[in-house]
Amino acid sequence: MQAQIEIKASARLVLWTLAWAGTLALAKFGPQLLWEPSQRVASWATVAVNLAVGVGWIIAFTRFLRALDELQRKIMQNALAVTLGVGWVVGFSYVVANAADLVARDVEIAALPALMGIVFVIAFVVGKIRYR
Image (cartoon, rainbow, N blue to C red; front, side):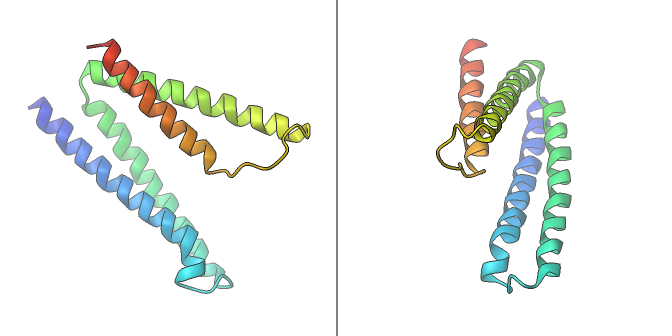
């Protein structure tokens, strides 16, 4: 029974993740590929849809966490805590270093979520190994 609940919550989370990624891609690339950049209403509409789908993703993720058993939830929450901490520390360290003109060149904003994704995967795997 618990496995079925987890599978259902996981499937919903996957669908919401794909929907969010799709609307994000549409908001990012739509002005260049599908409509003129001067059509700001279309761009704002896709950003609004992306935000709304993002809220749906957050709700799906919280339901996913609630569907996990205690050990899986603990592993996930620990991995999320490490990821959030790294994101805040590295992100704000970069902001401070950049403001003090210590950084030679600007870093793309996409580098931070990429770093956080790598940290999350590593922290999750370490948690799985630790609690075997």
